[in-house]
Amino acid sequence: MDILLVGAGLSGAVIGRALAEAGHHCTVIDSRSHLGGNCHMVRDEETGVNVHVYGPHIFHTDHAEVWGYVNRFETFQPYKNRVKTTAQGQVFSLPINLHTINQFYGKTMRPDEARAFIESQADTSITDPQTFEEQALRFVGPDLYEAFFKGYTEKQWGCSPTELPASILKRLPVRFNYDDNYFFHRFQGMPERGYTAMIADILDHPGIDLHLETPFTPEMAGRYGHVFWSGPLDGFFGYELGRLGYRTLDFERFTATGDWQGCAVMNYGDRDVPYTRITEHKHFSPWESHEGSVLYREYSRACGPEDIPYYPIRLVEEKALLADYVARAEREEGVTFVGRLGTYRYLDMDVTIRESLDTAAAFLGRDANQPMPSFVKAPL
Ligand SMILES: Cc1cc2nc3c(=O)[nH]c(=O)nc-3n(C[C@H](O)[C@H](O)[C@H](O)COP(=O)(O)OP(=O)(O)OC[C@H]3O[C@@H](n4cnc5c(N)ncnc54)[C@H](O)[C@@H]3O)c2cc1C
Image (cartoon, rainbow, N blue to C red):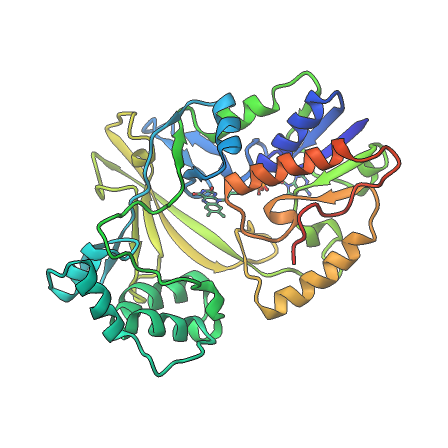
């Protein structure tokens, strides 16, 4: 079958590869001038640093099959994400761990002492937390909440933590040991050549034609047996019901010589610092050596029609509109909506790959007369 995949990010590439290997002919299009979607990386001309153009991406997963899949196309260098934060005039270790707690309170507590101490700080008068703020106060009390959650969350989401649901903070966000590895996953690493080279190799198959700078037009759909859409769900319908809300990011690039901040990611928790974090890209490739350095100051704001959608908001209003678009999409034949934009969910790369492999398997495994569903993974 001739199949159209809209989007040359991870979703389009992984689904396209699986279908091409099964003997289908796949056309992959992307409106951008490069492949890789938001995982795209470019080697900076001035410094030679491999830059994460749409924000830093660290690969981490618990799925052995997904780890095996990416290692088929790329060598992964060991990498642990260790994030710091500047707040209230000091630098602290994240996620909040025993080092952070001892430094913040000027103490030398052991795990059980720290656990009891944090419990004594928690606001136990909140028995049924409804908002993010209540949940944080219930877990860690006002001091840690002010320093590490309040300002950062306001900047990231553009609203008060009193307007966000408690579900965002599901578990106690504190570790009572000195483990500062940001992710718990078994497999973690960074692609030696970068994600763009890895995704280019996924797409490198005789059954795949890639066309960049090619936006989707509705007439295209009729020429193919099936369409996999990894663009914005609302965009497929010309935003006819309104726009699903996203946060966008502005990256303010600057360069330096040597080591500017001593780590890859420095968050800024204080409300009066307008950016949420600074990333120093050469620290994401510690096996490389560069004299120059490229850094991004990252600012978060509401996404307008011309901006790149980054984080789906998914609060009550957005979910109501999403339900309308899902109903609309389910009436559509010959199109399957995939990926972070097509299903309006935040998806880590490993989840994107897992779902893409499952989507291709569902397509290949169905009876010839059985229609492919609009969603393999329900957005709601
Ligand atoms: C700031 C940020 C940081 C992240 N960091 C991490 C991380 O550290 N670790 C991790 O595992 N994951 C991370 N992610 C998640 C990761 O970016 C996603 O898992 C991944 O990009 C999803 O791939 P995708 O193909 O679904 O979407 P995308 O990468 O967005 O690809 C969709 C593609 O579709 C194209 N397209 C859209 N509309 C059209 C159209 N009409 N016509 C033609 N083409 C179109 C777009 O140009 C785009 O290239 C991060 C995400 C963000 C936003």
